[in-house]
Length: 82
Image 1 (cartoon, one colour):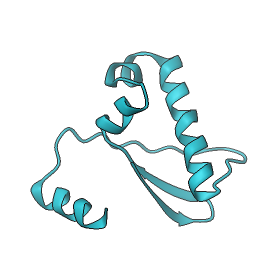
Image 2 (cartoon, rainbow, N blue to C red):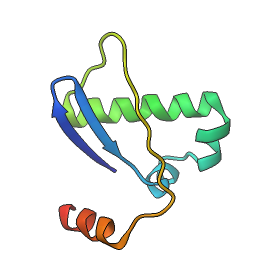
Image 3 (spheres, rainbow, N blue to C red):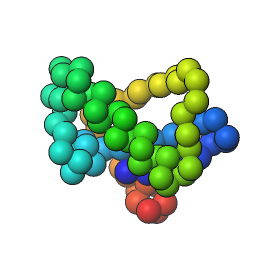
Image 4 (tube, helix red, strand yellow):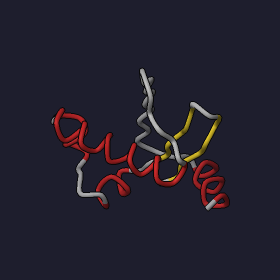
């Protein structure tokens, strides 16, 4: 998992299905079980708060992009940042 602080009110979270499974959740949990999805979301928000001191106050806007595959250039670019 990678967290990118954009500004005082915005963070980007990059997470793989492997990261999700390492936290005890499954792909199906997130797509079909609302309660488990919410548990996962709030656990991620806690982790972001610990790492980036990012506290949620007021309305929250969430944007999700699910990518099944990653191109070779994307993989190499991500690998270089890690």
